[in-house]
Image 1 (cartoon, one colour):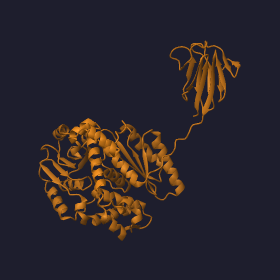
Image 2 (cartoon, helix red, strand yellow):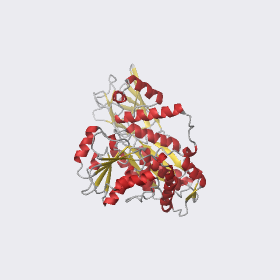
Image 3 (cartoon, rainbow, N blue to C red):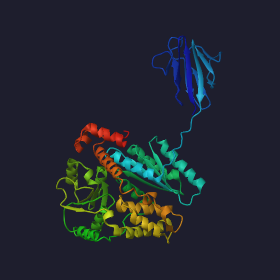
Image 4 (cartoon, one colour):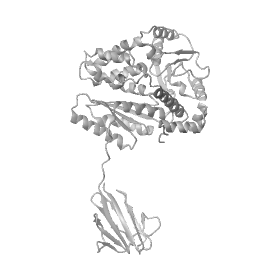
Length: 485
């Protein structure tokens, strides 16, 4: 709707106001009317103004005074347009309009920038808010149809008024990050998007903290949905002797009692080991985030409860959770939880310490993707194998799975080559970049601590044993800002 502005002139005073579209405004000199004009001879309730697309509807009110439109007296309803002047007593109202300006479409960022934003928003979120991740896959669409699909998705997300980031993950993959939307509104948006995208596109949705607290886990949930990885997971691929023995040790706990916590970096295979234990024991696992107490309560009788990221809980909350669980408790953590709540604690090494597993895992992930993408002869090129072996895999096995799921969706051939893999795999940072490495580590520690304290800088300083002013200074140096509430 057009934006209507009224310039009001009275003896000794001139000002302007904006009319609210689709809503009547009463003009008069009674206190509390929509547009109060005192000292100009108006009635208490003189006229009402209703902005519409075709013009402003003027309705003289009962008991009101004289109304003149462009110096012509009138007593009936009328519609005025831009440039018209309304005379009410000694007041002159001049109307002008501005056509609505289309909101600029956001420019999609690169995959590298999108991943950086996703990782940082998840760190900022901590335990205080939700983050939504959306991946829209459009294989087989021509350029015009894909552009129309992107416009529909962008418009639907922008309609929520939420801050958002759009990324081109590949020609056929659009990523959407929604980090500032309330949980209920995020659920509503997720419910609407598949219909908005249409039947020729696939939409995968994930949100934190319910489905994970790190970028690779959320991406993995989306890729699992796009590739049809639901229900029972496939048998794990165990090549490294340490992992083989560790899996046997975990499965040996099937007939024992007591809670189990598997510690290691996210994506390293912690959940895989616990799923193997449940499979041997013939138990169904109910998986929930440590920060999602309502979901934990939905576990059915006889299920074992697997709680992810349990080290995110404060000591009192962890104690309360352990006391309330009526079944066997399994958990994953990045560090050993405080207290003696877990009689069985095992540690999983990162993928970088199990280099011989990279290619066997990669082959298994490509094999699982063949049916989903309709390419039964899909293989890895020699160059792709070299790149996979050279990468340091900070996101561990989950990152490897995500990279190959994206590659399987993106490649236009039956071979996954360099062009189908993320550019970061071929642009390793220099090994002697000590300053950059130190800044990256400092940024990670600060984000983690601020997230744990819900961005309470004083509490973060106490946790780190540093003066508050030092934390404020380092936040400014590293460009860390408190997220919007």
